[in-house]
Length: 338
Ligand code: NAI
Image (cartoon, rainbow, N blue to C red; front, side, top):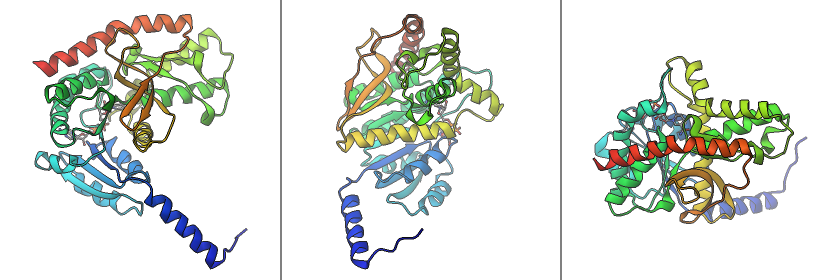
């Protein structure tokens, strides 16, 4: 059925719309690695986000095409593509949020740590530029191995004298997205209602979903919970194997990256009670970086939340992940300081 509005009420609703969009602050978001498998769909999703007023797409190749393409979409943000080192400064200047999916992805048989040699250098260079050109921006690190690239970023920022631990995030949202999907399938509950915190890090056993805290609650057996945990930990590898040499998760990662970026922007804009899991500088365990629920606010991390009660299975998982996470952190710190 169609409903026709009088021109007066249509005008009023237009006014309301222009007022509400006018009250949304200007926000520049830069994507570094924007022409890649993750970068392109992430650019699309950020172009659809009404909180973004300026979308800066940077890569070492192919950004003009991506920017021209995405730029034709009739949403709020202005899109500019930047290609090559010489244009990195312009891509970053004035950014409120920088999302980094630059670097090589896994092929079958590789661990995330196998990417270290290439991606660590890429992240180091990009973070040096962030320190110089947009030192106040929030940084969402997607490039793997996240367990090491986040500590690398922190060290680079410390050296530049602008490190603010509240502004650096390892993006672990895809682990949460997977845990929710897999849990909903087994628990037979609507996936849109599911919440599952995922803690630890972002590689293999360091990914620890807390299904004991999942909502809506379901009475799943120990065997099912063990299988769900394993599937969440191996979710990335499942995609790498299915893609058979053509890369790792890109579409689901872009979705997860866009969700997390949206949460960061909402926090910056003062929306209350924005809570997401992320790998951040932390004191809730003895490890200096750890993924857990964090409250996002105007300055980035407002609060790192407690882990809450863990099942015995999860307590064991937590102890088991610490040595690997510790060594990945140390590897990153060492690389950044060599
Ligand atoms: P891709 O190879 O399709 O794209 C990477 C892009 O980075 C390319 O366009 C490349 O030109 C660009 N790039 C390389 N060096 C650069 C530099 N110095 N500056 C700017 N751009 C540069 O790879 P894909 O699939 O997009 O994955 C990117 C990264 O994301 C990988 O490290 C991958 O492991 C990681 N990843 C992280 C996930 C997470 O949950 N945090 C999930 C899935 C992937």
